[in-house]
Length: 221
Length: 221
Image (cartoon, rainbow over all chains, first blue to last red; front, side, top):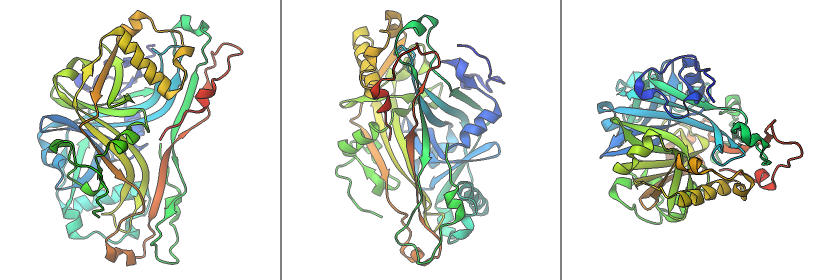
């Protein structure tokens, strides 16, 4: 149960994984790999005394994560005055063991703690939003109608360092207690992944418009 | 932008969707549909002054959600003394509009607020865990080595009402400002879904064990 392949130590006591610590990873490569596998994060932010968990699009640039939303949104108003938790996770499979106790899932998750800051300079905002769009579909930004000043102004953009991060990763077959391998229950893994289906053109596309090659190359996971 | 198909009102002011409120749904059928589509939730729980977001397996029974973990876990120690946020979300597609401002995703999410309670009676715990396992793979519980008293004792089980819930659901093609439909950018949706791959038997399965039919029927989404 305690294969210590975690290459590095926890960056802080509060990020140190206590439960199932043998699944913990703190190295930067693992953090980045998980962050780069999906654009969906869950941000924990205290509002009116409740730790709200908000799903949001996000992206990574170097050692920071970024997410955006409506500047009128509650989260962006209180974000800079507290530490938040930024979690990204992916379900990779159902792990059917020989006991309900070892019933599990294969997954990848990263939890980042820290103080976020808002980017307010319009040119800077626009540059990051361009990186976001082009990160999902290369070259897409320049194919779009350029943003107006107002559109940039009403978009809030938050950013946070990924320095204080911890990951949990589970892969592979079930792990039963040694004695239980003699129990005659079928065990195994049902793998789960994101599937990207063929793009569906908007019925209101102008006649003769071709789907960009990059749209077809979109992947996830 | 404001098709008011939300059949019911928000159950509380703090769950009322403020941003993109035209995507809000508060009816029980939508709440249940989203909760029943995936076993992955993100729980927001304040610990040491930080709104930790913990990914976890969960399941629904009637008007309550349940999740379990190690009884030694920090979350289960502080859960009953605060309101928590229980969020379930699924990414259904990438929505490529004609402007970066309307770049979006199709998704389903539900956010539940409230006070969770721990179930401590061993028989009650076991009954709920059985429902969880059988909910994912029908009949699976009785194929497993029965749990020991100790296994049940070290498993924490939390439960929470789904009464105070709000959903956001986005489906369909991009929504651009009317004037932008004349802009010659290709627009459309890249659908995303969970894919369940063929089960992989544990290499340590006893010889001659057959994969239960129910394992093959597992779906997600």
